[in-house]
Length: 230
Image (cartoon, rainbow, N blue to C red; front, top):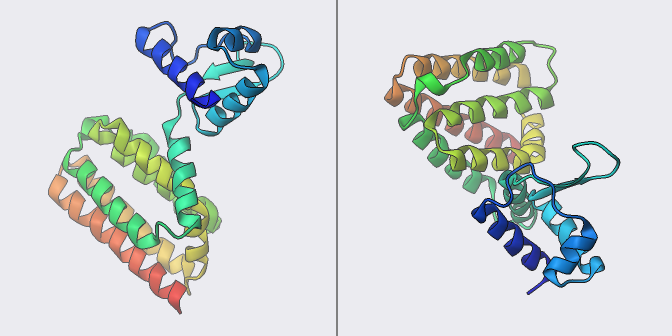
């Protein structure tokens, strides 16, 4: 086994047994290397791999947040994989579009209005109404809005996958949006759709909300695809 696999197996076993929890510190480098029977140089390389995957965070200095801490941020690993898939053209925007339709459509159908952070959702849309808001910031808040709504379905994997998608396609999303002929007009229309989607969510009208969000995703995908092809 490779060093990072040995470390990952150990961390997984410790979490499953309850010996470690999210937020706990790992033993010192020397102690962990001895426990796992790997060299310190191999251990350091393994920790770098696990940090890239979002399993741990490492920081120097003193204080409660220094050292190596179990983080378990699966969206980081997923977004890294998706980014590489996009970069090598193994995954295209059509694939992203279809995946969003599946994830967000399912989330709406299984949503619970009581679980939506309404004030946060409204605050995001209010901020996005600002005509001076940079395109990049609008799109970041747009993604946050969609992820926030997806959390109402009480399926952490769905929101984790959506967060991973948001991170991995951020640059591509901005590039496609900048190709649009009239971004302010597009942004205003998206906001109207966002408000309608939020209202349907709040009213518990799942079928209406599902139809609105799927039309919203499809419309924007088609518009940016046409602009990018022009």
